[in-house]
Length: 435
Image (cartoon, rainbow, N blue to C red; front, side, top):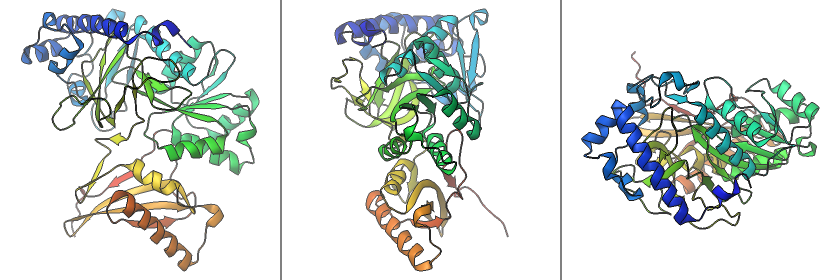
């Protein structure tokens, strides 16, 4: 186990370390970051008043909107001369979120990503094909640092160019693949089209993240690629990939709590929830130097798992993500997550897990249409066959979601594939047209 003494630290010792680091982090933010100094003062909190982990509940939350409002340097807690690398979110829905790294932060990033890869059995001697995007996006670089820290051979492929991905995988005998889960499925499909038997290749493990995915999708990836597929977690606002990941038991993601403190809150009230209760994940960085954050609201829905893990790691785990507050659709008062739809599609024979959710409003009533590809093996242009399959999928979705949907089957490979995060939702409710 990578850094076994830390990862198997007794819980009491770990809590003492977390408390010490939290107090130091709050003092630094109060002293060096005007944004947090003001927020703490508004909350009536001084660094001296933070003495236990329970005091976290009195500290202010940080949101993505907060980080955008102080773009680009407003959350820097280190002198600019000490910042050696910067990453940003895409900024597609507003100003980007900035993550700044000191040399110590880069070492930390390599450490936690090494733990992530090691937890899934990767190590020296492995050939890691890194198909996450490089550049300002944190995915590619974070995985790269983890692979080199671990002592593996890293192939810095970046995303896209599936022909080269496939040929490199064959030429080098890649043993570990890292990318988004939707791209892993796309690559499996691409390999099948080109007569490549991926289950027969040396590839044995994959580390997939950057978008929510279901257990059904995991099973599909494992079957098509002939690997064990591990869920990993991270976000630009905290450090990038490396906040947590699954071990070989694949039962929840270990959060590296000596560096990132997790809470689960009620997303409506902000109240802290006990282990086992589903809510919004909130993270506090305990050791980041460049851009530390207090109680960052991730919008990711999950719950904490306190039960000991057979692997021996003593860190708490989170259940695989169940969706996001901002990905959640509310259809006629019912909460719907894309993963719920995906799980249904994966168990219905005759359709593929390539789909789009189209939300519209008809006569003041919300409607949900699911476009889904027919499986090539069962593809038919016979109207009777198509209608019967559509009705079957609609029935399965109604049982799972509790609402009526309209299902429209489309031709195989007609829904655009993504080399990065999959975009599955088209919400037309806010679009108005004039005649």
